Length: 238
Image (cartoon, helix red, strand yellow):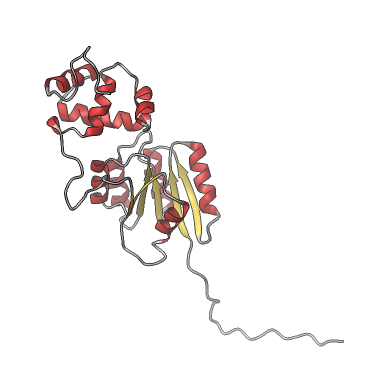
C-alpha cells in the first residue's frame, strides 16, 4: 500500500498570475454587428468584453460603471455627438483608450477626434488582425495612435488633402447638398453616397452651422448663391 504523500509546505508567496485581461466596452447601435464584434473579441486570449452600449449616453454611463481599459466606439449612434462624448469619457477616465471604429472617415472628423485624445481611428473595413493588434497595444506598453482610414482622410505631405470650398464646406458636404437639392431623404442620400444615414445627418448639421442655415431649403439656396451647386431646377453635377 502506497503511503500518502504529505503536502509541500507553503512558502507564503502567492502563485504568479498572468497579465490581467484587457477589459473592453463595445459601443455600436447596430445590434447584430455589435454582438458579432463582441463574439469575435471573446475568442481572443486576454480579452474580456465587460459591456455593450447602443447610444452615446449609454456609453458614457457604462464606461463610468465598468471602467474598461479600451472602448471601441462607433460615432454614428443615437444621442452621440462624437467630440462631446469623447470629452466626457476622457474627463471621467483619462487613462481610457478610445478606439473609433466607424464607416465615417472624413478628414475633419478624424483630425478633431485624434486631437481630443482618441488612441485609434479605424475604418470598419479593417482586418481582424489590425483591430486585435490595436486593442492589444495596451498590453505591449505602447503609447501610439493607430489610424487606418481611406487615403487622404487625414493629410498628405503635412497639408490638407482636399481644399476647403466656399462657405468652409468639404467636398462631401457639397455632395450631400447636391442630393438634398433634389429632395432626396437622408436614407436615399446615404444609399447614393455609400454612407450611413447618421453620417448624412451629421453632415447636414455641419452644413447648417457653416452656412448659418435654418432648414434644408435654406442651405440649398445659400449653396446656390455661393455657386457650390447648380440652381434649383438646373442640371445636377451628377
